[in-house]
Image 1 (cartoon, rainbow, N blue to C red):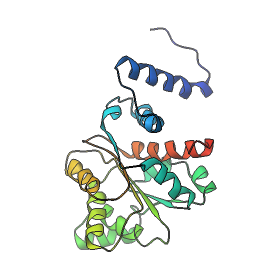
Image 2 (image 1 turned 90 degrees about the vertical axis):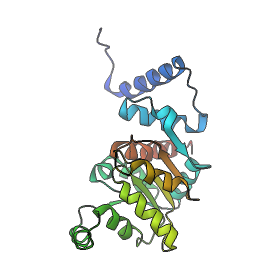
Image 3 (image 1 turned 90 degrees about the horizontal axis):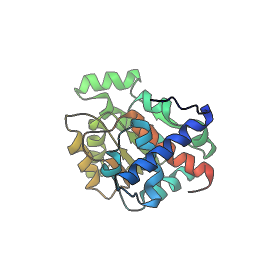
Length: 213
């Protein structure tokens, strides 16, 4: 195959052109208001299944943008997602990103209670004095605990991005969030990951920066 000579600054643009073309060749036409976000998930993973498996609550993207404008904070379940989210743009809207997974107090409490650190991290996040957007890309137990807190009436997340990847309780955890009235963006099925969670956040942040949201 011939190597294309593309300037570094044009690589992402070219990638999105390829994604758009291949989607059309597959006969897949995305809803206009969601296309930019789904294409960024595909761009991040090189996996076209995201064109079929992404699920959105009503007006999810505009609600997420409104929360970011209202200085909402983002809480992730991995340091990888924490690193990947564009903190500069989020900071321009007054928000911050947090991950409590490496906090020694979280690890100690999780061990004492016999639960995952993700479970305890969600409880720590519930104490933040800001609206919280949860970006979960790894731990289904994070989503399970969020649903439990909603059912208990102890906490209501402002928004849930639920894209944990794996085999154990992953699909069930995602479905439990989709059964609530919470605003959400979820990739149904087993696929996802910290990179996808960060990509969803960045997709919205980039469009806000451009003035499109």
